[in-house]
Length: 297
Image (cartoon, rainbow, N blue to C red; front, side):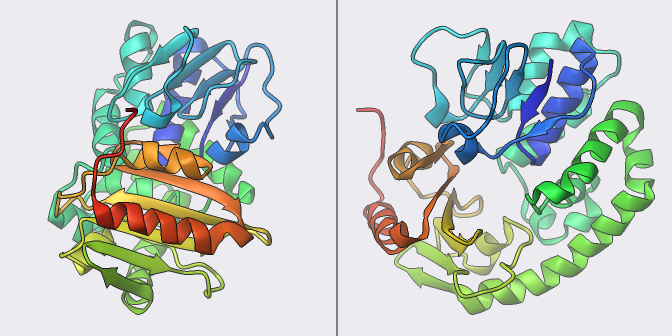
């Protein structure tokens, strides 16, 4: 039996809850959504998938992404919700050994981008938000840190988690990285009508940092599109509604399902061959400029 999830804060908390409730031993199998979509993951009987697209080989599946809605009944729970962790917490609450209520509440807020301006501008003053930002690199070499966080959140108080030497080191790095990221956003972002486009294709390494910061820097935008090259042959596009200027009507998850990706109504991502980048970017921006709802109809 393995927990299979993605390396973000919601995924880490999903692993915490599932490993506690079901007494699953580490390690976690950390997977990118596009790898699941393209059938590059060896899913085995007994696996529990969370916060990822469905795979018929698993024994249980928990997810909340609009674009992943199942067409047939599945074992587990699918529900549109602020976080996948919240679904798991509700399902297994009576079997958990610890009180994870505040951890789950904060995960709901972070994953659904339900944040205030001060939390965006000064994450260092908000432990849960700062901790979530320490999971910024999706390189598989970072798996030891993700596993470390799972162990800490299962066994320590939040104050003790934030006092852990490795967590403190990474959180200090987050603060420094966010300063540099602000400069990178200003240098590589353009505004087209109400759409801000952050183009990091010419940067190496790709700048990373506070994913909400762009909304405060470009307050006229209602949606941001970020494109970059993340491997030798691949490109990725991330799209998110502004959480400070809520005027985007496009269902992002539904839109990106047509571009080899998916996500939520307010945010999503896709990853694809680099040669498709100019066409995909042009078409996505055109849809967002039109600002008409993208639905199942």
